[in-house]
Structure formats: structure tokens, C-alpha cells
Figure 1 (spheres, helix red, strand yellow):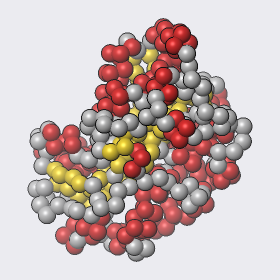
Figure 2 (tube, helix red, strand yellow):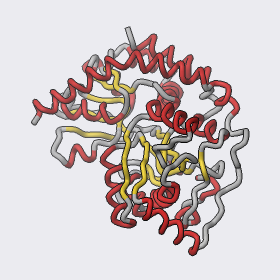
Figure 3 (spheres, helix red, strand yellow):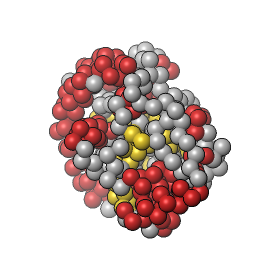
Length: 364
């Protein structure tokens, strides 16, 4: 088993390294191309009115129409396991098939742009953590307002969780520290521990290809010293596209520990020699759902969005993360306790400059 895991991890590592420079150049170009709109924020033609309550009769008609559409497609950077669990629960509840396209924000945004510009939608619902980019697309009219009884739940608090009347807060990723116990038995307690000499060349970090990753590294510098990034780069870490491949690399033994990853709960249940912890100062990123105007299954999109913020939906999609509802089994906390991005610091020029600074330090 370990040999198979190591072979798989090697394949992932090679793919990551071969695409890394392309990702940096492409991400910088994409941010630059969208610079003016991003700086404008949520202004423009997008509606700022909150979603209206839906009557029981109207909701019943939407559900009936959704069942006739039969399937709904979601683009999301969240884990395949939790997305599939969401699909299973959704299918059981409504008989509608959820088609999952799991990919990073940087991969999804160009597709969303293309689908909107051509009017040929594939995705019905899109989940992203890049709040600044989401606001830009809201101003361009990419989304429709969500409907459904779950959004009227006072505990959900749609006034703050649907801030512009279209995109809605679904849950939040919470960054953990993780390690392979066979390779690093000491373990980690806080971010400063990854600077230990014995971890040189054995740490996994995420490529800051999007606004969200840049915010994470800014958080580290703000809370752990302005020289933290330089000291981390001196550890010669291995670079990955995101939390999932980083977790796989630690589980297989390709690396000993990671700075950015998801809690290794499922891996532990399978008997992998890994452990994880939340650092003293926790960073997280809110996930925002968007019902796309170009959705080929618009009614099923509404029903899926509504289901995502129900207790049953949260048990799936918010497992191992932060929930928008309290007391959801399997979640770590609620999004009320999660760090919020400061969009005033995440301007297009600032993101581009930070990515260049990061690349200079980490890619030799």
C-alpha cells in the first residue's frame, strides 16, 4: 500500500512541478486583465437587494421543475469526497443527479467567463473562495438571486451571508497543520514549528495562484513576522497546487509536514500514519456559492443551492470545515469564527506584486 501511495504521490509531484511556472505566469496575466473591474469592487449593474422570500407554492413549483431537469452541475475547489457526499444526500432527497467538476478557482474562472460570454452554460452552480473576483462578476450580472426556504432560516442570517443579493456563503475552509508521524514524530503545534531544521526540504506549501492563497501568506507575515516568508522559503519546501495534493503527499510519505492543508480526518480513519492540528491563530477562507445566469438547469440550481445551506447539506459540504449553521456534526466551527479577507489589501496590483515576491523567494 505504501509503495502504491508513494508512486501516486510522485506522479502528483511531477505534474505539479511541470505546471507550476505556467500557473504563475497565467495567474499574473489573468489578474492583470481583470484589474480595473476588481478594483471597482461590487459596484456596477449588479443588484444589491437581498433575495426575496419564496412562498411554499412557488417553491413547490421550482422543485417540480428541477426534478424534470434531472441533473445539475457544480464547479467547486472543494474536496471530491465531500462533494460526492453532497451529491448522494441531494440525490436521496430530490432524485436529482449532481454532476461534480472538482477544480481550482484558477481553472474555473476562465470557463465561467467563456460560458457567460457565449451564453452556453455548462455549470449551474459555482463555488469559489476568491471573494474579490466574485464581486467583480456580480457587478457584471453573472448570477441570479438564490431562492428557497433554507435562506429564510434566521440562523442562516442571509443579510450578512448573501451580502450583494446573489452569491451566498456556503461554508469556510479552515487551514490546518499536518504531518506524517513516521517521518516527523515530534509533530507541529504552530506555524513556527515548520521552520525546524529537520524539516528542511520536507515541507509542503501551496502555490499562491489565486487571491485566497495570497491572503494566506499575508496572514502568516502579519501574525508571525515580516520575515516569516523568507525563513519559510529557506526551508526549500515542495510546492503544490492546493490542499488536496499536499495532504496526499504527507499521507504517502513524500513530504513530512505541510503548512497549508485540510484536517487529515479521513486519512486517519483509513489508518494512515498522519496527524494534524489547528494552529494557535487560525486562518480560513469562506466559500461562496453562485447560481449562474447561464445555468442549463436553473431550477435544479436553485434547489441545490438551497440544499447546500440546510443541515443535511452542511453535514456533507461543511464536514471538516466551518459551517454556516451551528451544531452540525463533523464540522470544526462556524464561519462566524473564521478569518475574513481584507479586500482593501487584495487589489489586483497587490496580488500580482505579492505573487512575484513569492516566486522570487520560493522558485530558484
